Image (cartoon, rainbow, N blue to C red; front, side, top):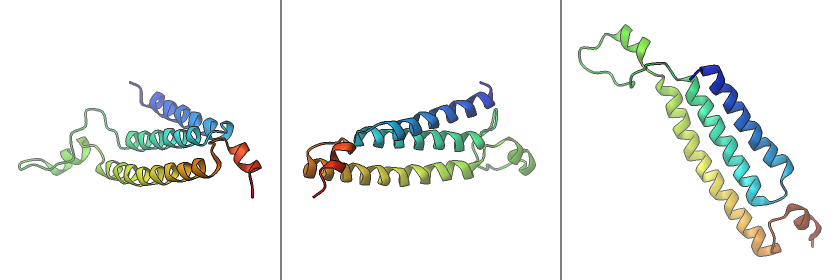
Amino acid sequence: MNVPIIYTLCMILFSVGIYGIVTKKNVVKIILSILIMENALNLFILMIGYRKDGIAPIVQPGMDAAGFAASSVDPLTQAMVLTSIVIGLSMIALMVAIAIRLYERFGTFDISEIKDLKE
């Protein structure tokens, strides 16, 4: 697959997430839109470190250092995405906990109704 096409698809997926955040009134749909944006960003970062016919970044005995560096994928982007997944998971768990508290207090997930129910 052509790499610029994949970058464009990542941008489209990110745009779908932004559209969901801006237009939806339901808290659960907003949380799912944030999750879509996070996955689009993770995919984009992974594609930055992509190398066609790349090998795993593990040095084995007898490997040429110059050839290894030229043919292996970038391990830094993989580590960044792994860290991003862990941080994103905790963020999503916090947002779901807040959404549950909002539902317990106001009985709805609709943001416009929650704004009207100020005490």
